[in-house]
Length: 302
Image 1 (cartoon, helix red, strand yellow):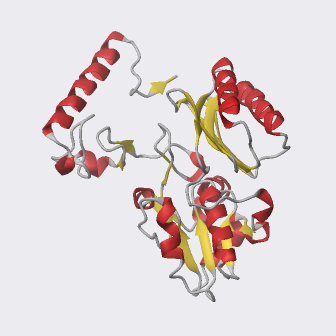
Image 2: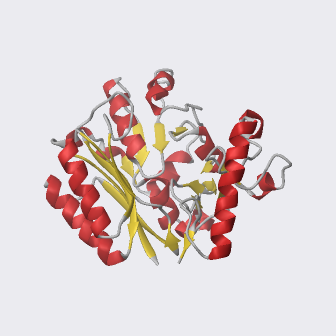
């Protein structure tokens, strides 16, 4: 069984290249996989490994950047290693919005736990915003929520500027970090009633029983589990190898679906050269399965 940990921390980071190389080395040493993004404003990541190795990694990260606790973190389990390799990336921001924030700017008083969140989104005048990408929204979301249909998070402020300032705004995302930035942005614009789901969707699905839930569908996650259900159990979605978007059983029955090549979402947009290249990749995966060897695009059930 593998431990999967998602986390973020707004903290001043200097010497980005030096820290990137150092983190990359101990991730490999501790047999940890996943992705960590570092920027001058902090770090954001999801990693996976054995429990004792995850604990060692967390201690090292906190020691390097001199903080005691993450701003937010969530943990779940996986029967297989959901990442292919360890990656540490340097970015301008840990979430791209053209807005650098500090930990002290976070609106902690408006963070709602799952029970408080249910109360708020049941109110008729609450504007419920799903800050994630459209394909994430299609997999699952909260009842009565609105998705701005923004493909790039940097463009999100264009939508936010159209909102009514007097209306309560309830925001949510997978783990909470996208809402952190959105909340700070709205506060600077003069919004008073801003709320966000503490710990994001994953915290909600972990703590709220299905019978009391306002959530419909599943939650897309950026690893090989693809989606999670209540109790953070692995969901029913698959990943299209052509467009890297989630697909369901209905999509797989489509004439436009071809394993490892295309799905109804991307079939008409792919060139024949691309499709042929994807077919060759799928042949390699199938061959790896037959011979019992590994392939980087193959899930690793252990």
